[in-house]
Image 1 (spheres, helix red, strand yellow):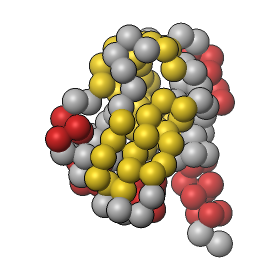
Image 2: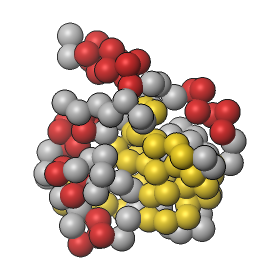
Image 3: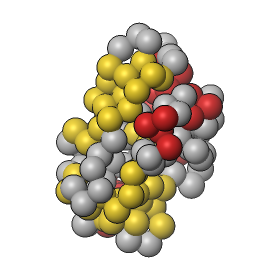
Image 4: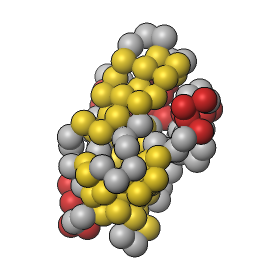
Length: 129
């Protein structure tokens, strides 16, 4: 299971790559693996405001539909439109091509509520027990 060191994570298996005042967000490799083959993604709308730990998108797979919660609050600057025609990119590349949105961060201090890669790895290992 891939857990990049430069990202921040939630207990709901979302990730955020924070660069300055922007965050690229998505679901983790663990999440896509648990969901199975992803068939549809309802992305957040550009211009919409999202709040940390609140619903922002839906990912549907052959197994189930799952809500995605924003790892950090802010305004949606960009949504990954390619996922509307190729939702399987999340399965193939959860951290690169399978990102969901780019957010202009409202409050950078919210980063402190997220897990580091080491903390997330430990958390996921605890779930497997």
